[in-house]
Image (cartoon, rainbow, N blue to C red; front, top):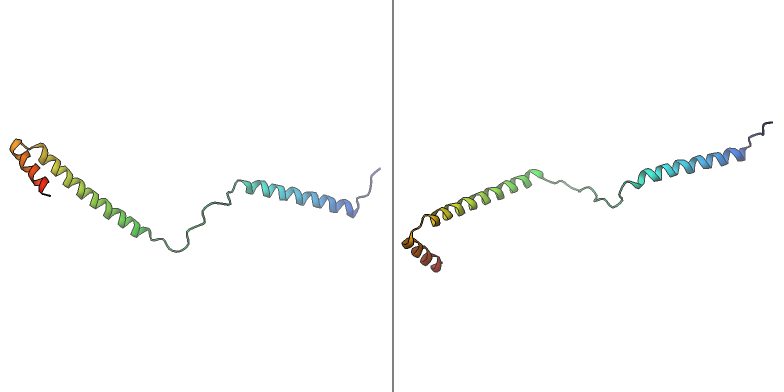
Length: 92
């Protein structure tokens, strides 16, 4: 014979279903890190950063070209020129 389902049984079943749903939601949220960095507030002007980067790269390329020119000059020196260069460097 079949027992009658009472309101108490329905409430207990509903509580178990809610606990089950809560556990599923809790397990899903475990993967997310609460301590992630918050999004940046305000406007970040990427173009100005890129332009600054480009200008810095340009200056570096200029310095490199000057350095390579000086290295080329030093490699092509003979003994007299080496002495002159040494005296020039000492003066600076």
